Image (cartoon, rainbow, N blue to C red; front, side):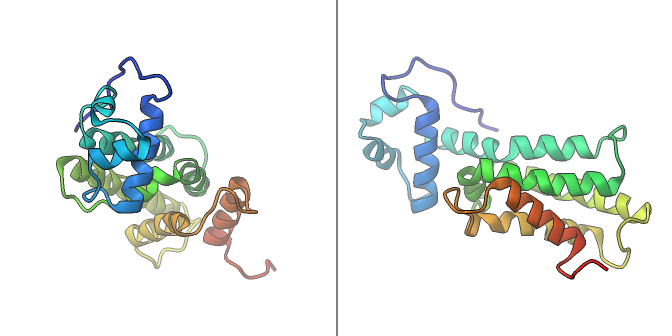
Length: 202
């Protein structure tokens, strides 16, 4: 997979992080395939030569954005499924869902881009494979929670896992950082709804 942009001496006023943020915003607004490096240069008010002083290609920017979307979530899920991980499977599954909300909100532009890739390049295919692996690991955690008796056993674990991630991913469609709901409130509400339902406890 194409690596993240190498560190280079930056042009004053712009660095790799700023260019990546603008690129992700532009990819989300116009579509990755429809966005050229010339479009990015125009958005930044730079020449294309100045952009290439920081990064080597548009694909390299895409790879960095998708890594930004996936790396922290991968760490959260991988930690939860370790054989020596502390807590019951149910507790770890619940924690994964809650942390997934926090990760998505913290990396919302990159996650939005991730959810739009269709496998049109090696970089996109690699990202999709990483997403599938996360689905598999979450299904394993659901299965473990079923086996310990903390989750109902009449639903396919793979389906439950996809539905949980789908619920989290739906945040990209409506969550606004400037809104009235802070990340912790959203994470608590989504996790409670997913595991405890909406009915009044008895």
